[in-house]
Image 1 (cartoon, rainbow over the protein chains, first blue to last red):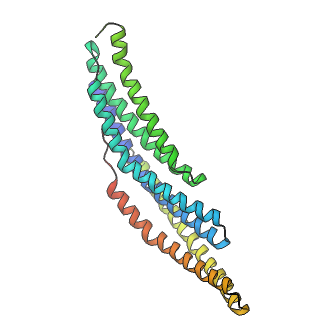
Image 2 (cartoon, chains in turn brown, cyan):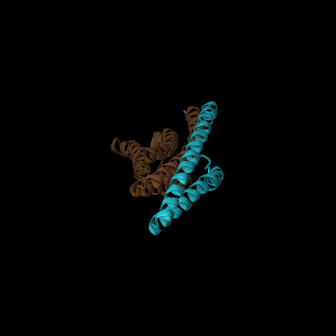
Image 3 (cartoon, rainbow over the protein chains, first blue to last red):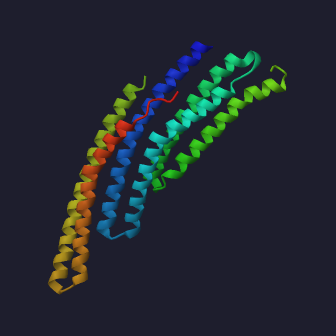
Length: 159
Length: 88
């Protein structure tokens, strides 16, 4: 059980690295695209287009900084909380393996949410909302999943 | 495991970067030409506002291009340095 969990965590670590690299590529291309859009809007005299492009650049920068600075801290904090909750009775080992996997999955999911938010920035200029929402959903889902084991254990009288 | 995928994505992103940079240069050149024409027409007919708008527009285009070709690569270097290791 521990070996298979370690394998899955290693796979998720590689996925994290790949998604982080993709975020850099996407972010830079998004900023360049918005600058191009701003230049085109400035030439044809579209103030709304120019303002929208500037807003998208700022939003993209915010999403990138949030993804690279905020998400690791969030994932660390959530992982620490999960480590303290743990399982009980005969479920301790299973609970520990599951908790680690859930934390890893939630961290990768938050990073993928940030990447999807960048694609929103290209499409509509609204870059920040989805990243924050997905991060919140991932953390809440993770905590709910981790608490399910101990709650079920107490309910069934195993703890 | 994901390294070949990332390499392919990097190649595609490099092509996309070159394409967008080329488009930006074209738009900037055409925009600069348009603002020069607007400024010349304003100067010829005594339209001070038209001339000043054209000058500001030209300066704005230059600033945008400088931002794109100087600041964005530095932003890329900054992001590569900030790239986080897996927190699990």
